[in-house]
Length: 388
Image 1 (tube, rainbow, N blue to C red):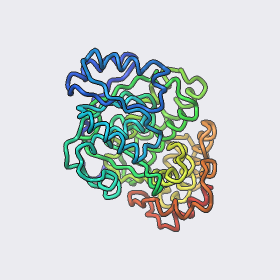
Image 2 (cartoon, one colour):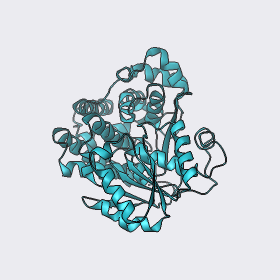
Image 3 (cartoon, helix red, strand yellow):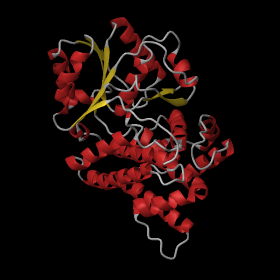
Image 4 (cartoon, one colour):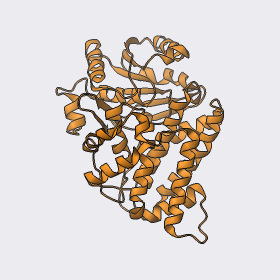
């Protein structure tokens, strides 16, 4: 491994069937007023809401409701959540839901005492919080984003059609997260597979960078193989606890900063996908799947040795009598076949994108320099056209 780095993760995890009961250990550490953050109400249908509320009351907490967090949290929702928090002088934010709820809670946490517009400060200018930060905890109900153990927070501005992520430091990371794989059982298949691809993409974004013999790459390959195996079990039987637990655990380790160590990391699939999402409001994992293959085929010649390794180590492609390029392309074909098995979107047109959006999507795509080729805006347009 090359370079120098430090590693620490500030989030405490509770994993398994009985993990919700650990709220009793964590809640006494924080103040009296809790902002309970959740989405469209599915937690009320499956009974989780009642369980959480009962535990909050048993710990003598005052509960302030903040419902209706959407899959791609908007800046207007952020402003609403900040107002709720300020009006009630909340001491703690408890997100019960998927990655969007966790992302949103982190955005609220750094905005309550911020004396500027948080969209301008954190998302457009990319600045760090200098104000008091209200602590966050998560009860995860959907696996994919890894938001339960990182400082990432993605917010969408529908007016400007910008979907921007900010990775905050450890002070903003959840103080604890509760991971019970059974909470994922009731997810619709489309949401489940979108989350699965989000996990896989997170790993790829870090894997497809660098050329050195890196321990992190071996970890990434093992996680990718686990995700592929467990995903095929889960689409046949969504209530297979072993498969769902492996998927949930892989999601956390895919994006809790471990796999980035010693790597430059890429993240252009996310930049492309998030810009598509800004124009279509499509499910995050589906926007990633729709642009992945065109992007990887475009950069393959510049990172050929890693794509060859991806083919042989993750997909078991045989090398005999083949060129490196043939092997690498077989790996991408194996990836495509798996994506088809899951029922993922393979084109942005499936998500509502049209040719007349290409220029706008390209303009909204942030260009990063950690991968095998730094793209031009014309490259971005070409990839997007290949994604239609």
